[in-house]
Image 1 (cartoon, helix red, strand yellow):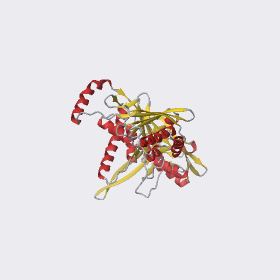
Image 2 (cartoon, rainbow, N blue to C red; image 1 turned 60 degrees about the vertical axis):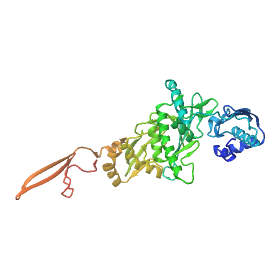
Image 3 (spheres, rainbow, N blue to C red; image 1 turned 135 degrees about the vertical axis):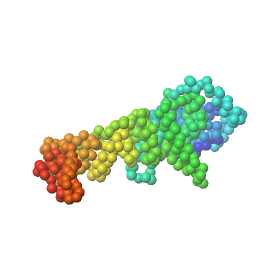
Image 4 (cartoon, rainbow, N blue to C red; image 1 turned 180 degrees about the vertical axis):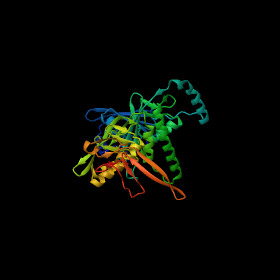
Length: 425
């Protein structure tokens, strides 16, 4: 009657120890009461733990589990069922095997034909369109910190939905199907998501539209495959590739969501369309040039391209100029783990001449006075002189840069002040 089994319960648990403790509670007969509400297909009970907890499990008329609940603290703290819910589900399995629920479930009443039902539903909902309730949705993105590997997801999406209380979406494909097809979906005795009476804010609609695309693509793959797999969906979570992760962040601009990264959860984080707040110090250290990067504790890319970066408690979307200019420094940071970069005298002159203008496009550069005094900046001016030459016309080209005359065709014999000066190209 009820489509639950031990393996399915174990897979739903966030930790293996949760299932083991719940099974111990079940074997110790800690489930003290069991009550079936045949109309709503909800089974309620009490479990003796640190104190007596109220637990519940809701099913649809096909016997599939759609929602569970417990008033213990672990329910809101962790994903998946707690040990009290595990004990309840194992007890339901035992009673179901005995036939304890036979004859108690009310058979479904005859329903109109599908075409008639659609007509009745359409016109029955017309009066409710203007008074729909907006449901809340909490989004959590779990980021993978190893983006170099293409054989694992870039991250995972988790959802909660509800009115006054948020319910964990334990089967994302079921929610997306209900959203797409306008069907009701039961989450618990106090909440049923029903597109006929509920609406979503524009940000939530954008996100569900994006997730529905993935759901439909997965459906096409399943229909064309001999063997059916869970694919990108694992009931309560959706795996995202690097490309779809980028689309998720794009769709999430202007909304708050939770971010899980390296064991830390950032609540209600936002994407800010700004450059990363980084700067540089540039100066001399004896015979070497020293470049120091000033930034927070760490910078972490959330997609391989670096279009979205986590720094502190914010997600930044830097400009393309900063993103491309900072890439070689970030790669060097990841390899050597130091924010200080030293250059020999020859390397330093080339760095200042060729690289410094690009670095200044990445962040503010504080050049120390002893180095600033030998750097020459200015406007490069070209001069062309025409003169008679035989039966034709000769041409001389000269470049003038801050008092220095440069002849590019004369062996670079510069004329003017030189010394230890460094030209910025």
